[in-house]
Image 1 (cartoon, helix red, strand yellow):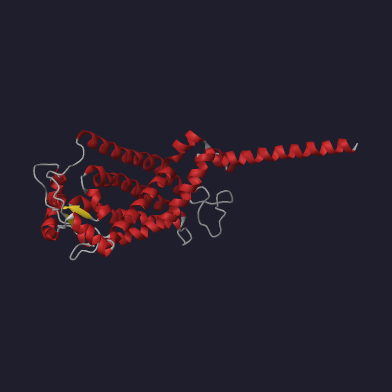
Image 2: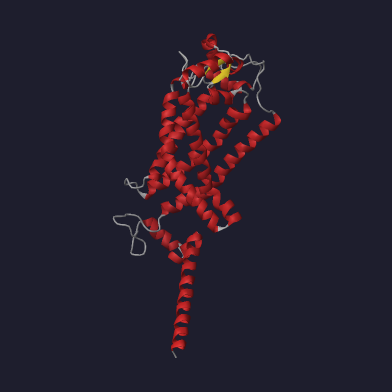
Amino acid sequence: MNLIRSDLWRWLCLALALVASVGFTQLAMAQADPEREMTTAAPAIDADQWRQVRSGETGANYRDSRADSNYNLINASGETWRQLRNRWVSPYGLIVVLGMAGVITLFYLIIGSKHLDEERTGKKLFRWSLFIRSLHWTVASLFIVLALTGLNLLYGKFVFRTLFGDAFWASMISGSKLLHNYLGPIFGILLVVLLLKLLKDNMPKKHDLEWFKKGGGLIGKGHVDAGFANGGEKAWYWLLATVGLLVIASGFVLDFPNYGQGRDTMQWANIIHAVGALGLTAVSLGHIYIGTLGTEGSLEAMTTGYVDETWAKEHHNLWYDEVKDQALSEEEVAAQKGTKGTGDTAPSQPS
């Protein structure tokens, strides 16, 4: 008899466990599928309900449950944000980023890298200090991480979720969100410091217009005049100083929602952040290409701090005329680094 009771209790416990597991499974599936989550949370939204929402009428079934909220649980602004994000920002942002990558690839395959017209002299000119180089690479690394995690937040579910399943994608999206939220403010602060340090050398000059007219030297013959920073570099600087700061500001609004901003403000901050970030990501591909594969000698400037005087003469001739008497041999550069530890302190050079 005791044995029968024991078996009966075991079967009852097993049955309860199965019922509970089914309930948790349904909940997990609802959370993984937004459409399923909506159907379990609220009935279908019909035209009459939308008319009620837009009219401002509220009731027990429509009022948000949060304290002191003046929003409806179902609100027109949220639907507007969803339409903008899903129908415009996400698809066209992807087109812009992939389009830029495609254009750069075609340019490289058809035209190739820009090599120096003359042989290197071996004489070096000091260009970037260790502080600026360290700051640049830190900001650049953070930018790449933020761009990749941001792209994953927007498009990851269409790629990684399909390829690897919900469990892998959930971990990946959680990590992306964590990195994006915590590294974003650090990036913002360091970018402001970098922009302030480079402001003097990026003020627009009259010869920059000629640089743009000749496409940085791609149109016509001969080299175009450029000071310490050419027209393209200044354009990238001011893009970061305007759109970049707008992305940072909107990111802070999203990152710290505990300062009284309402839901509408958060929605617009999200749209502004996404549009600006996608645009910067696309343009940054051109900046990265020109600074690495696209132009011979450019990468050396930001890795060693020095450039060959042939490179300076061809790409920044006005700056070269100012500093050409300060050119050093490779032996002198090595000796200077050995004496000073960094070799990054040259008199009357931009810092």
